[in-house]
Length: 344
Ligand SMILES: Nc1ncnc2c1ncn2[C@@H]1O[C@H](COP(=O)(O)OP(=O)(O)OP(=O)(O)O)[C@@H](O)[C@H]1O
Ligand SMILES: [Mg+2]
Image (cartoon, rainbow, N blue to C red; front, top):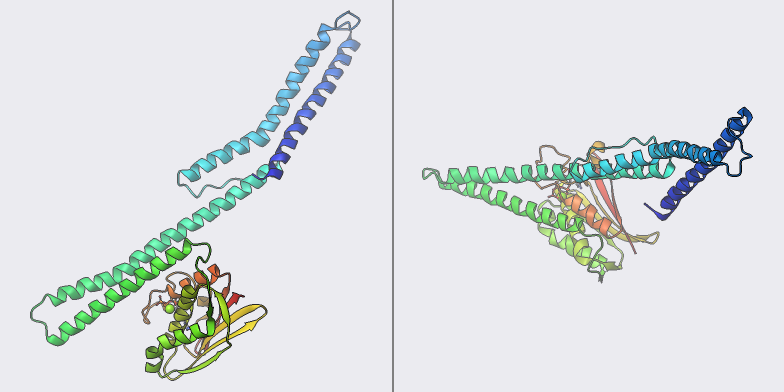
């Protein structure tokens, strides 16, 4: 609870206590006047015991009523809040509280609790989905390794089959290794809030290096490369950003049919450094565009292009860590443009 809320709560307490005293005074006076008119008590006596008794009793009655009202409006919601917090601590993230509460500060606390419970249950769902996805992704290559290894044990298979099965085993092992290394990278980045190691480097040189690293892939597909890079010295994480360009370029090459163009540009715009990687590939359906940065998401449900669906999740996490942004514009059958903006 912040200082303002706690002081407002104190004000509520003080106001209700004052109201209790004032009401007691009025009720006491009214009873005294009534008793006097009726001639029940004689206030001309040297010490008005009756007056004291009446004042004390009216104070007790008013005080009790006021405290009951205060109790209902403050203590009850606080008790419910305490119980709800205990439920969350026990692992029940579905608990929510009714926000129809008269006192603003307590209503705010309950509202904040509900937001917190929503966030925690969202994280829990993500965690469960993540575990389900990882187990599913791991199971597929493991089953194929098991299957082909069993086939290899048969002495009667031909040399050609033996070669083919070994290749399948090698591919599945490679997929497992990429998957685990991507999961490790991602979980490390998710537990990181800032970029720890920063240095000055030439961003255009780094992009050229990334393009060269993938030369075997794009020459094999006979892609035309259109490169337009402004010379920019950038201060940031060299290692993490190289991963961003590699992942985006691998996608551009992978999802673009042979003999098409891939463009890479780097320039400054409105105080930011902009990198655009555009391709004339298969494009991304409209409904998939908002999901491609999610872990394990692949627009092609058959997963015919291979991969783990973690490449863009890594890109998005790294760019966020670098306080930048990544966006996509794409049209099915025409191509995609990925734009990364980094603050200078
Ligand atoms: N340039 C692109 N053109 C068309 N579709 C793309 C492009 N880049 C990404 N996608 C779509 O977004 C999905 C997610 O991309 P991401 O890089 O995360 O996974 P992946 O490439 O399938 O696997 P990985 O990167 O782990 O090897 C892809 O499966 C693809 O459907
Ligand atoms: Mg990818």
